[in-house]
Image 1 (cartoon, rainbow, N blue to C red):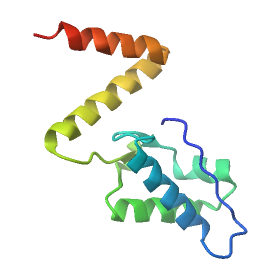
Image 2: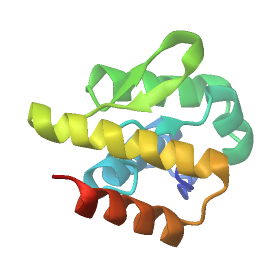
Image 3: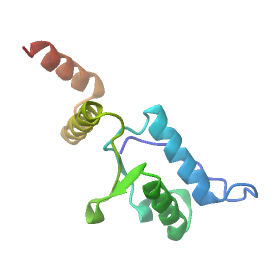
Image 4: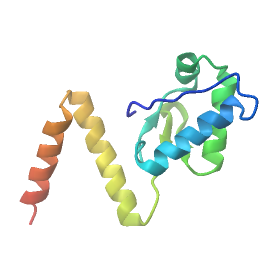
Length: 124
């Protein structure tokens, strides 16, 4: 997952923690900070990281899924859904897959972008 900075104010009297989490993920998806295909942390991992109850994070994920923002893929995890027209969805999925491979290979962002640009220029 792209490194997303989530902050939850557990003492807030106006917005419950699950809603703070849900709205931050929605904002990150809308801004492109969380691209289509990005994998979210597991419920347990995010709960530990933020100091929240597992059920709080699970509720946020459940609401995000109900809103069509993310999709749960069972044991594989929770992912940001592709949006837009079919061509845009395919492009988003391909870009996410490329970013995942580049990350696994330890390729720096600049080098990955250069490789993608080369590939795009080389196509017929």
